[in-house]
Length: 375
Ligand code: MG
Image (cartoon, rainbow, N blue to C red; front, side, top):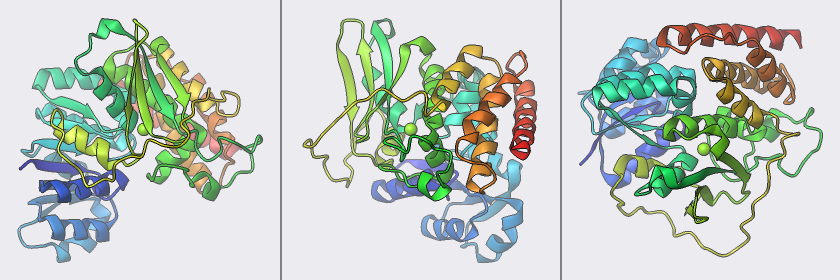
C-alpha cells in the first residue's frame, strides 16, 4: 500500500486527498497543516501519521491532544522535515507562494510529487525542473486541466502537438453583470461547478486562475505560450484537450470532482476503481471564447509569461495581495486586474534564480499593498 505525505492537509485539496486515501487504504506518513488545529488533530487521530507539522502559533492548541505515536514539528523547518520523509508520493497542496519551499525540499530529496500548488510551476518552473533532474524527483500534476493534458499526452510525440487547450468554467460572472465593479465577495465565492478554497475560487471569478494555469502548462509541459489556448466550457466536464498537427483532438472528460485528478496523480500509470458515480453523457456541452474585456486577468498571465524572468512571480504575488484585499472588502472586484497590471509594470528585468525569487515576491507584495492602500 502506498505511503503518502500531504503538504497542506487541512485545505480543500488536502482534505480530498485524505478521502482518496481512505478509499485506497493509503498509509499516511506525514501531514503539514496550517493554523486549523481542529482539522489537523482530527486527521492525526484518524490516520495516525508518525509526523505532523503546524504553524508555530497553533502548536499550543495541537500538542496536548496528539495521538500516541504522532510527533509534532512546526514552522518552515518542520514542514521541510515532513516534506522530505520517506514516502511513495508527496501531495503538494499548500496554496500560493508558501507552497514553494516545502515542494522544492520534497523534490530535492528525490520524492515523487503530486503537484496541486500551481504557483510552484508558475514562479519557479525552470528552477524546479533543475532540482528534480538533479535528484531524480518526479512531478505529476493534480490541477484538473493539467491532469487532463497529462493524460492526453501519454504515448504521443511532442512534435505532433499543435496546441494545448485548457478549459475554464467561466466562473460565477460568465453571463453577467457587464459591470463587475460592485460584485461582492459572497457572489464571487459562489462557484458554479467546482468546490475549492477561497483564493482559487476568486481567481476563477476573475479568470486569473486560467492565466496562472496557462503559465503552469507552459512550464510543466515545455509548450510555447503561443500554442496554449483557453476556451470557456461552462459544464466543466471536459478538462483539457490536445490538438495534434494532423487535426485530431484528444480530450479528457470526467466529473468535476478533484478527488479524481488527485488519484490519477498518485496512481499513474495505474487506474484503480473509484467510488465516484459514472458521468452521464447527456445534456448540453458548450464552448465559448473567453471575454478578454471583462476578464483582463487572463491576458495578464500570457503577458507575464512572454516577459519571463520574475514577471510570473510579480504577477502571482500581486494577485495574492489583491484577492485578500477584495475578500476583506478593501477594494472592489475590478481593482484586482488594475493592481496586477500596475505591479507587473514595475517588474525589473532580473534573471530568475532562487535568490532573486524570494526578494521579488516580497517586493511585488509591497508594491501591491501600496496600490491597494492608494485606492
Ligand atoms: Mg484548475
